[in-house]
Image (cartoon, rainbow, N blue to C red; front, side):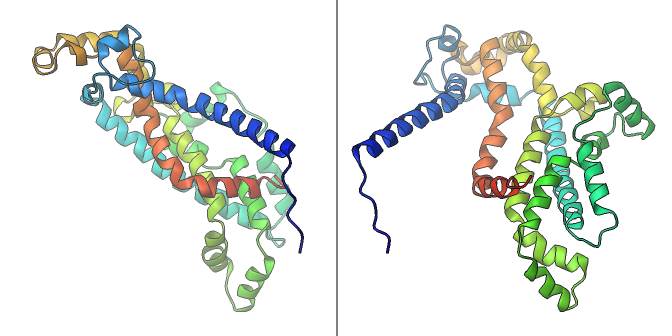
Length: 301
């Protein structure tokens, strides 16, 4: 049995430096979110004068209540949630099934088709040809413009194909001998064993769908199809006007007082938290799959 090497002073010193460096890096990453959050729940007058730095003072949730009262928030949130769920499901399925097909040697000219898909990752036609294509396909100014253009993503396909190739071939060969077809092997063997990479792609896709608002800017004119991020982006640019409306509301003045009435700065902070909060909530549940999936999928990618 191999004897455990005794740790030297140099080992302890190196470990200490690494722990301190990673601790400082972690604080540097987390502190901006913490700073914005405590400013959204503190006395708005103190926030405006820059007196909230480490500890919240005058706790309240009126900023969130006032922002969520805006009439366009609920329908926009529904559109964002719908495109995130539907788009993620389609992207995961379209990434996994063609990736499985590209691993099968009997697939007709599979190397050519795989390289054809990968080549599209390096070239873009530009905004105007893409816009004309969407108009021709009649998906401009429709909900489909959020889903269809991003369904096939070469990067996800590469990750998924590499992961499936790392699975033991004997499992699929045994199922094939027992008479299982392609779909049975895909649904009952490949998909269950591919949870890490599928969770990784799902996180990538869900975050991308949730945060994206440029497709709304370029291809959507119907206000009922505006996403939450685009609506919040508009509010972010109108922070002064929103704060003024809230201050001029006599019921708000009577109920809450000046310390909880919105200011342009608190509007911006609150909108930032509302936008990133869903991503912060779902990420911890997928983190363990995320690390394993991205490492295995990237080995030969």
